[in-house]
Amino acid sequence: MGPHWSQVRLGAKILSATLTFLAGLALAGHEAELWQFSPREEFRLASVSITLLFLSLTASAIHQWRSEKSEVTLRNIRQGVTYSLHALLFRIQDETGIDVRDLGATVHLRVRTGIWPFRHEQLVPLAWARFRATSVSGITWRPGVGVIGRCVTLGRLLIVDVAALDRQLESLTEAEWHELAQREQQEPPEQSRTLGMSYREWQRARGKFSVILATPLIGRSSTRSEILGCVSVDVMTPDPSTDSYELLSEEAVQYAVSAAAREISNVLAAFL
Image 1 (tube, rainbow, N blue to C red):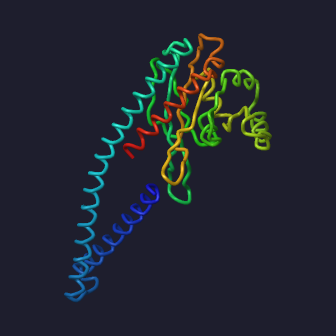
Image 2: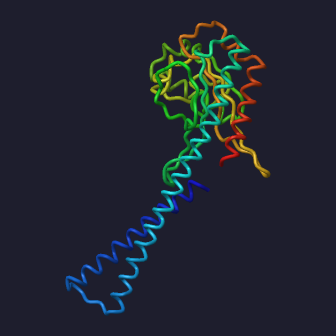
C-alpha cells in the first residue's frame, strides 16, 4: 500500500502544480490585457490559486512532520536490529570458534522502487554488524540474485561456499558465463553456480566473502505470512578457518540464525 500511495501523492502534486500554473498564467494574461475575465471569473481563478497554494503548503508541512517521525522510527528499528545482529555474531563465535572479527551479519529488506510500470524489487540493507572493515561490492541485490536474493526467492535457509564457487568459475570468460547462466535457467535453482548474477556482478562480488549463510525474514499477520527480506551471516576473506562451511552448517548455528530472524521480525512488527 505504501508504494502505491506514494504514486498517488506524486500524481496529486503534479496535478496541483499544473492547475496552479494554469491559473497563474490565466491571471497574468488578464493583467496584461491579453484577454479579459469578468470579476466573478477573476475571483474564481484567484480562489483556485490560493486554495491550491494552501493545500500544497499544508501537504508539505504534514510530509515534513511524517518524515521526521519516520526517521525516529527507522533509527529505533536499526538500533534494535543491530543489537540482535551483534548478539548473533557473538553466539556464532561461541558455537564455532570462528573469530567474531571474521564474521559479519546484515539484514536486507524487500523494497519496491520506481514508478509504475517500471517498478522493480530491491533488497536494501536495513542494518549490519561487522567488526572489521571490508570493501563493498556496490551491487544492488535483488530477489533471485546472489545468495541473499536466492534465499528470498526460495524462502528457505541457504549456506553457500562462495569461495569454492569463485575457484570453480574463475576461468570462465564473459561469453561462457552467459552460456552457463542460460543453461541454469532450465535447472533447479538450488543447483545454480552463477546465483543469478551477471558476469560483471560476479566480478565485483568475488573475493569479498568465504561462506555466506542466509535465512528468510518472515513477517506474519493474522491472515497470511510474507517474506520481508533475509538475515545473512558471512565469513570474510581471507578466511583463517578451512572448515567454515561445515561450522556454519551446524544445527546450533542454523538455529541461532533462525531465532535471530524471528526476533528481528518481532522488532519490525513492533514499529511498523
